[in-house]
Amino acid sequence: MHFFRFNSLSIYFSFILSLLLIFCSKTFLFANQYVEKIVQVYTDPTKNPVELSLGVLYNDQLVLTCFHGLKNSRSNNFTVFLNSTKGIPARLLTYGETEDIALLKLEETVNGVTLVNIRIGLLKDKESFYYSPNPLFPWQFRGKGLWIGKSFLNENGKVVLGFRLPVYSGCSGGGVFDEEDNLVGIIQSTTIWNNNKITLVIPGEEISRFLKRSGIKCNRKIYP
Image (cartoon, rainbow, N blue to C red; front, side, top):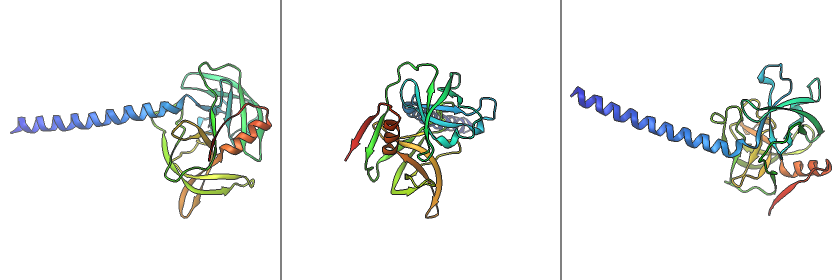
């Protein structure tokens, strides 16, 4: 009887462990689908990591992020981390305070990085979107959500898109992608709408205009 109970418990715990391993492996693989384009921006390498923000590796030397995460820095020099060990010095190349978009230039070229496609046009109902995992902890922070079908005006009077995404503090500047890995926008902030917390995202169209005005090549993926 005790032997039977022991075997039953062993089988049960083995089954639970197998499910956890499958879940963790899928989570890790999913996160790494996007993590190669996401970076961590240190506004001041000597400060606590709580003051960090995310960014999108736009090409092999440029990083897109939100300007509000940089504007209180005492200099235009930053450190960008591609993973937990690789930190690259960067400088502020240009920014749009009204759009809340900034572009950093790395002092080194990152090998194997392709130019990000920026999605322009309407989003679809019930279409899945994914927000950037933190490159320092890709297995912990991944998110999947939906566009709520509504746009808002931010504090500067610019249009931002509303999403239901389970974001966390420090996500500003991170990318939101569609299932084809196109950049839909970058996370700006959160707000409360209809008693629900939603994520506000600077749309691809605004990013595209900013890049063109800055003289940066832009691959636009136009959806009807």
